[in-house]
Image (cartoon, rainbow, N blue to C red; front, side, top):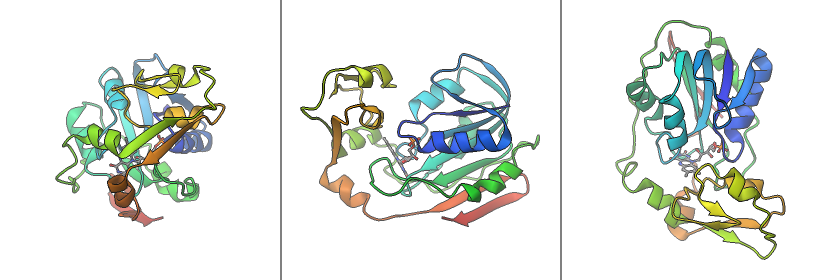
Length: 234
Ligand SMILES: Cc1cc2nc3c(=O)[nH]c(=O)nc-3n(C[C@H](O)[C@H](O)[C@H](O)COP(=O)(O)O)c2cc1C
């Protein structure tokens, strides 16, 4: 039994670590594990453009998981139809699942701290019955040039504090940054900004993106269980 996570700015990782500690399960980063078969896994990952991050898809396509509990963190905009998409695309048996609203990567709000509200997720992780995740609403625009929208809406700035230490280059999940200079594969996950030891990288939001993010659109914790759906407000 394991808690795995994919996390670029720490929200999903913090939730994974909380659950791991609470349950006494090992917690691993999917980018660092080489094990290919799991009996029961909680997988915490962010929603990206109302979709599943490419790295998470790659991971799910390369492992065998007997009982899967996916937990998608989202930045209070929209979680689209991510969990159902995951169920349709991969063969792993989903026994419960959840959406958890967190700090948005591109906002300065407080980090997620309402860990006690995750109790109902914990209560539902030992099931063996496959649940059917119902379709949820996904915006018409979600799949259209989604990565381009992030690229155009968020600018990463290399300040003169950069010493070309290479930490961003080593950590980038997309191999898209060299000493603070981002290339065309950059998905604007801000892992480089978050991990820069000298705080030498900054980001700026371009107007339409700033306006889009100015209003919280949804802040429900949604938990799918064998006996139904539970909604909780944050
Ligand atoms: C490229 C990108 C796309 C995102 N798309 C969405 C989205 O469609 N809806 C949403 O509510 N939050 C969205 N977010 C916010 C993240 O899902 C949220 O902040 C998440 O908790 C970040 O997880 P992490 O800190 O573990 O990387 C997006 C963030 C990034 C970087």
